[in-house]
Length: 339
Image 1 (cartoon, helix red, strand yellow):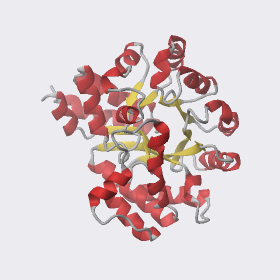
Image 2 (cartoon, helix red, strand yellow):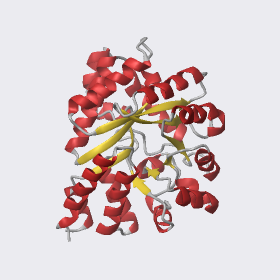
Image 3 (cartoon, helix red, strand yellow):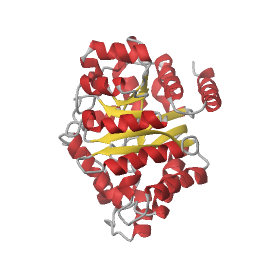
């Protein structure tokens, strides 16, 4: 069995960096449009083009523009619950056994629904699906005067921690609104005991990662530009802070020209925990098996490296130890007769 066949046969995949609003399928978008009474193009291909980024995307800021439509389709408890349910069902059908789905509740309150109700709706959608997933609640860096909303998000993450929520995140246009502008986020998360990941080292360099690490990040979203500074990679290794690498997304946003240019082998050789993720399944037109296949092909990885990446994702997850043990056993089963 070659590596591509092995990846296709997997029933033990995990995705730790997966945005709900960036992963709305065409089918799901149509169902949500009926709930929100929003008109969409009649043919699927035209709709797909609205949901995915073009090949000539210039940067992260342009990439983020693709979130406007899916966010508009989730402005009620019913639509958020439905979208989360749909995504979980899709993930299950793709051979995933666990995912951490992130979204910003504050972006779904345009019709007056509270962040609390939106969060509860997303949790309800996950439970209804029967799929093992947890939520990461995103605070936003988007230039808006949203400190109060971000602090509310961290508070909700604390309240629902272990009850459907596993962490919080700081997401958005990193280059325009760097980590230094959000010291209150780091302080609030630490004070409330909420584990957090931070989008860093994508649109900005290694110093952005260093700031997040210095302020207590449990994981780093993307983090690929940490390779620009050995002192930062040393911290990642020393503190055993995992990287949530999203290959296709980083090509879309022009961080790298190709996956073969990404420092994935460098990180692994240094003993840094690398995880492979999708970021946004619809915006980047991908899924976890596509991402794993691209990485294995680009670097000539075989079953050993593939298994390492899968195990890394389980160990880096915010899942409890019992679930981690179960997932690691599932990975072992998938590789038992692979050679």
